[in-house]
Image 1 (tube, each protein chain N blue to C red):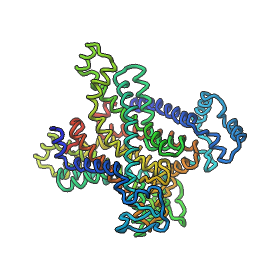
Image 2 (image 1 turned 180 degrees about the vertical axis):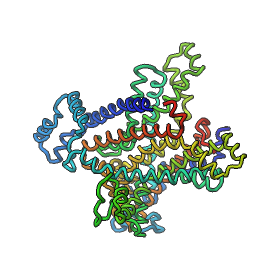
Image 3 (image 1 turned 60 degrees about the vertical axis):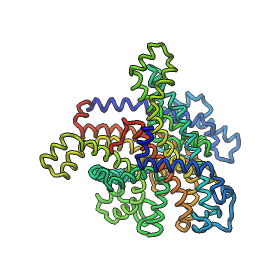
Image 4 (image 1 turned 30 degrees about the horizontal axis):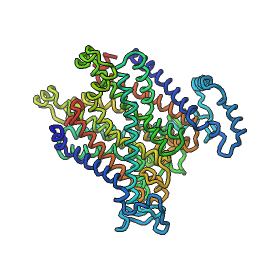
Length: 279
Length: 336
């Protein structure tokens, strides 16, 4: 409760929370919120490339589809990709980090050196290479993003576990003959949770951004799916006339990522005082 | 210092070897048959078998790996499918363009970000600080491909004050090659017309690429300066009557930028990744647009070489950052 009240005092964190919640609501109810939900896959060539109007506030695209509706429908792809990639990375990265940090000798060394290898190249480049080799599709893009994002969690969990491993409560548990599995997952993990939660929140925004880049480069969603990055790519050949076609999907990306970043920053201040940004 | 350098390099080598293994596994184990990709869509099964034998794809994986290792050790990354030339030649020719763009973006980030972060810290919790904070959180939330297109739309298409794409106008010849960085080469050889033209061309890509790093540098400088401002020696020097600007810009700043310098090393990776998209949009003839071409043409040899090269550059920059650390903070140098 105290934490919650402290969180509410941070205006920008609250703004972030509002943006994120609004995005989730929009994504869930997208087919009902979008004025023309069928425009996900239907085209109306007669109404192509019309500027913003009362009828179509964000204009229409090269196939006469309502850009506003497609931006709303695109929130589903963005959020579900981010959610799947981040939870997948957590599932791989967290146990590996616990094992690497709590274990010793070969297991730990192997895990951490493999993690280093994955971190030796910027994530986007590795993900692009993987997505290409797996073959361009949304499913493979998500797989590539997951396979390149887990090391970030492993690193964090590793550092936390190393720190907690020598603390008194862990030594006490060892004295009580608790199993390593139990110590790692029931005792160390909850204590390591705050930085993981912060990283996962910021990771949601980051993944939306990276997934949009993959979509833009043709390595993610395939037409005619309403995906923001793909939409910006499709708009390029109709510039500068159809500026609305490129502008609004990009603004949607910005707004959602901005929300997750603000929220992550605010959470960091509240639940992880050691990382508190100086204010 | 020398011992430190040697140790750092030795520590990086296993990681780079691991990267070699990873890229090899990726190409060979992934369901896509490289022989089929090489043969093209209309190849007959017999042609595919021939190609498989020619490139040694029919041999055991472990032998293929050692052959690959030997080739890489000799600097042979094979022939690019898209250009028909050795991948190393292609990359060597395109690397200066990427380095020029990356340095320009990093320069923008440092020369704007450090003062901006310092100002925000000095004007802590005032209007300027809030504006800067909004900007730094927003800066890393913008998709670079979208920013690139918006800048093109505004400055190249609507206002027509900056070129849309490329590194030089088509009528311009490249300056005599000294470093391969057009801005530097043209300035040294006195070709100011080329310099001016190149400067026009690099402006939009550099701004686009620098946006994320500018935000990060500003942010870390701000928190660094804020922390230092609370130190006792700063209060003492203020009491003694040092002018505020001198105190901040000389004594406080030097003690505050250590975290920022570390970030610059990490940012370099982000810049290399960002250059892929930015170069593709602005038609910048560097390794980023080469990577995009390689991806579209399934040129897996070029993709492999690129991934390894980025790994090497990234590692080298981070070692360099550690050295710079020692220069800024002698206490760190002593531990080296």
